[in-house]
Image (cartoon, rainbow, N blue to C red; front, side, top):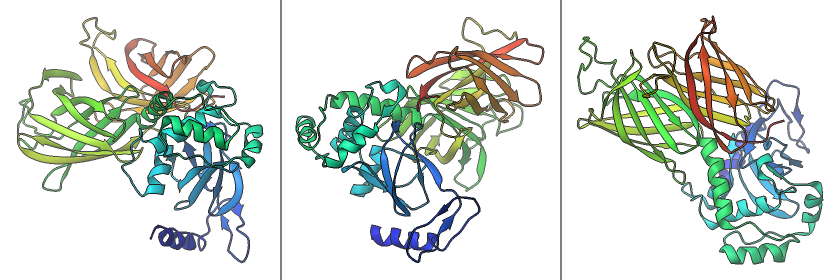
Length: 433
């Protein structure tokens, strides 16, 4: 059934043509497809991984940003010489877990399974300079040697897989299962991290208000939601039932993408503050649906609701991603007791050339001005414009020494007066230039 589906889909693709300068000649009497293919990213960052596409059978390699080309519905086969890594349908972000899921027709493949872990171990062992901070680099010499290799048994246990690799290749597998698990988990946490925006869906079918979900690279998850008037409770006493905001926190589970809100609070969007702790009887759960969408349900005072949210503010092929809070207080300086207000959630992506894109959600006004600017990788200095028409800027410094690092930069008005700051955590998705 899988073969029939993709054969039919690819037959349909061959009848289509688009705008663009790139033409893929498939040979024979097939009509060529015009227009550039999409770009996907293989995680974790691998430069020099070979692949072939159903619509373009010539061997290509991933570049230093771990990017590969694909068209919707196309099957991509990854390999190094004769050593097969596996195949999957091309998507914007693709991992060894997706390869194993596709080959086994199992969407619930564990990231800790032998077949996933062993693929990660092997790719790590093939790194030409044994320095993972600049990504996995597979050299031409390795690709040439691999023309004589054969594929090991990925389903084997840790010890047997080492034996299988060394019997089928000329490399020594010196990467343990634990090292591979740590590396892949960190990479996936970074891929999942970011800000997601959507709406609450009430039992009546109405969409009510904003829900913002932030997944951070350290596994923390935060949700801000307004419009939760299903309990008909005007807690602010202003005659409106849709201005009450719930602030909830929890933990994102890497293997399944599942999370639940283990703490909930009442958040005042006007003051930008949590005004009460655990006063609202609300429970919520959710999960990642792929890498660019989350969905879940909530229960408030016995009534049910649901939400979906999609990724926002993402740049193209980023090197680093940071998520966190915009904060401030009336005096413009962070309060020592931590009572400074939360202005909203933010997300920024930094591309390999140091260009920064992102946005911040202002919980007080339900607006999302974009952030843009540059970072100097040598010094860590970052300068951003808040494109809200107010002339606000942000400036500070980032430490790129670790895979998961903290960000703290000042928020300035048009006169340079500090209004607050943004604070968050980040991670490296791929090497920078």
